[in-house]
Amino acid sequence: MDYTEEEFLNAEQEMSRLTSQSMQKYGIKPNVLFGKLSDITAAISKGVVQWSRRSSLWPMQFGLACCAMELFDFGSPRIDAERGGYLLFRGTPRQSDVMIVAGWITKSMIPEIKRMYEQMLSPKYVISYGECATCGGPWWESYNIIKGIDQVMPVDVYVAGCPPKPENLFTAFLKLQNKIDGKIED
Ligand code: SF4
Image 1 (cartoon, helix red, strand yellow):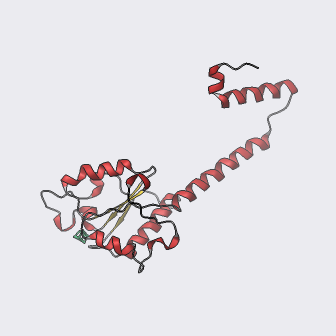
Image 2: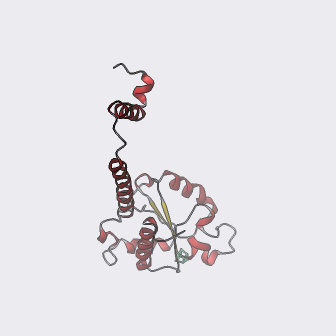
Image 3: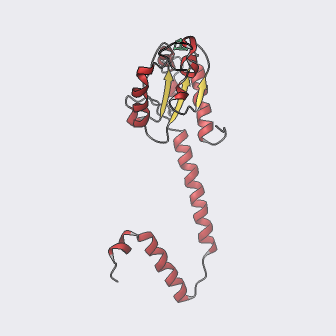
């Protein structure tokens, strides 16, 4: 049987058409079990994708001010962020899906932070780590520091403190996992 280019490019549609033609020809009724199996497969694949996302969070190596010192401690043997095997710090935004904003955000840094955010893999997540990243902190009324990273990009989890303890960042990741699982709403 000859196929036109259009039919070839739309193979899925063509397969459905041939299946339905064949069923009509032999008087076969639509297979209910087959339909249900496709629903089950869709549900399983959705769960697997969700599980893969929550189990392979790759944060970016990135710090802005003193909170970044606590971030270093997060990766140290004391906290051992990688103990679960799913928090692998990456050196480039192109291999990361979590941005931890640790420190105050000067107006001059906004374009650079935005550029890195746009270069990250999707779906991407942002953790606002510390008072400065969340609301400007001690520099609330400064002329050159913005009042929180959520003025620039969406934030998934906020961590309170000046500086917050690295253990709190671990809790933030657990919350982020629950959010990816759909257990926590925005
Ligand atoms: S929250 Fe405190 S520790 Fe963190 S960057 Fe701001 S001033 Fe520094």
